[in-house]
Length: 255
Length: 302
Image (cartoon, rainbow over all chains, first blue to last red; front, top):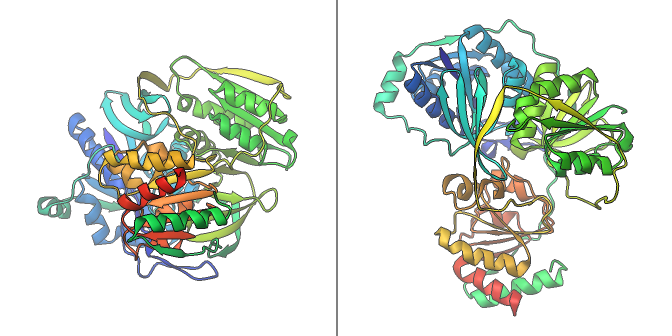
């Protein structure tokens, strides 16, 4: 039995430069395991230890996702092994193509009872890959899950709803996206990093043609941000600063 | 376009999209999943068709995602819209994943039917895009304009869907009330500059004086848990468009700014004059929030 963690190797857009024509220069941005994914890996480790399942990390991305540094970063967080599809042609796939590529790897692995993922990626931040992966596989899916237990073919998950904390049971195989508070991920120690060097990782090339994008970009640009006044007040004297702020908001018709 | 579908479990999304995603409401079919309120809201808008999916007791919305996807795809829609809640995303992902069509988020406008403006890569690039086939769109409802009251203008078709894929086995109620930041005209938002959860009372006092809702930056909701998760503003949380947004003790990282930068007026209060929020505000006070916030509350209530 296998538990899969679908993770992403990505950089933070905050560190990228965007030119007026909307071209992105990622030169100064450092890639890493996307910030929510270590939580999913740690949840997977706990479930694998409790059930005896094998914990397999899966990712699809640019060639850099298969670099030794990237593999060690993933494996040192507690995965048993990796299956990576990394290629220039796979860089920047859209959500559906990414989901279908992940689905293909998961089907090829076989005997997968559960796929875990982070709720959101640091770069695209659409929060749509886990659900679209579930749709591609035809498996049930729960998102924003704060606690997961696995007992035989039953997944018991907790999540926040408007009314409170809902406890939901789904039958395996299933796709679960973990929220940031699902567990505290480890900070890999020397032991984890040494162990990572001995764990297997496999590069696969996908024999599937990506689904055609059904939306095309006709224009890109830097976002036109609203011009802001940037009127700054010195707050050392809090009372007079507050009075001045109140006056400005009042005069500006905001209050 | 003549075959546009809205698939949602949320009444606000149904109401907003029924009134906004197509020039001609009769070209819209709304599938309301497990929510009679959503079905009724859509029916009042006079859309072409309303299908109300009735769930079995204890069945969450996600349990019927595959069946709903089948229902929608049989109609070969041109565009499918839904919200950004966890349940709505599961419904939309089931449709896009099964059909192998593009699914997009962060749509900010419709220059014409079948084309979108949106912000991609965490908000650093703006694009204009055009549908070349069926497209699934997950987006935040726009702020409600006028509401429609009175009788339903569309007959509601009900459909029972039984699916054994998922069951709610327990619900532990929480006391916090749900908040609607999307429709808030004023928001007071607080971040890591706050030293203790006890100090939230000071923030609540300012919000009360301003008749504003309270929100927060991500660490307060996800790391510290001082406020519920439905109150955080940012790329992965709420994206708000109030008339007034007051950012208190929030440094202004990109992931937060993307959530608030469409506010009409932004006020920042922060003790670090180098904080990026001061480059993105209309009015700023560089000072200790613990003295500035009570002073502002006093000025407002004087």
